[in-house]
Length: 419
Image (cartoon, rainbow, N blue to C red):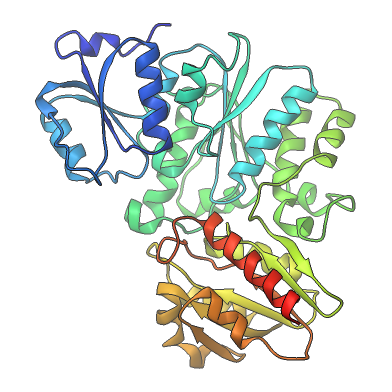
């Protein structure tokens, strides 16, 4: 295995890897496969970086552009890259990139499955939890295999060597504004991926409006037509797919038709698709009550998708709130006021802030200090559909959206068992 970044280590042959999560450990595995010396550092530990000794510094996505360690590494004239870029310099396999505010993981998994159903070797990697550098270190694909890579805005913003043969951009909506510093900066981070793509870029229909909003154009962009989304036949899927997956499926179909993949193969792929945990689904129910887990819904766009999916259900009770990312809270108030909701429960850090504006909601609002308290506020001997589609991160009270969703499902099961 060879790496294009090796010349940067001739004078200073030590690699600094910053962040000991999945991406940092994946980068360490790839350094080991290359027989490179490295140091894996994490902010939670007391070890001090030796910036003057590093020829190459690899940063995990969570490190903001102005993080002191990044600034010190740049001042020490080390080459600074993110984990995706590092991995991309170690192989020649084709890459299909997937980005967007919502739906990235679903489209990444769907695209990999579609290629496999079409007789191609493919693997889904990236921000979906299967780290690209780890896959490369493990030689998970042959030289002819395709990496379908989920790319977050954190990763996209600083890419230099990563070169997809195609990019799928699902949608765009306000998110991560605290990290990027503003809406346009967030958009440009994702758009940077388009500029690196050596082939077509297929975008969800909402991207046309955002391109016009920011006064930008790109001749390589191909937009999914709104009719392709509206006309999606999803009768084989559970109720929760009626809105949230339409754009995703239309994106896959558009790519397949562009590449000449038979419609029957596409239909087989979509029919057998199983969404990842904590995306909108009914986790348990009785004849009178139902509990819907959408813990992964961490922004306004995701909440709207859930509302569109469930708006026909009676007695909707909604759990909103969590850790903030610089969002404009008024947008959540206006959104929920536009749908037939019966009761709102505000939780977490932003729940407290939203409760200060409780008078603006058109329905009763309860403030709950923790998720468990919501279940003590539920109506007795009355039907309801309780939805956890919080619109905000879980980091204020949980380690992940998965932990939050798991707790919600346990509480729901306990509620039913006690009824």
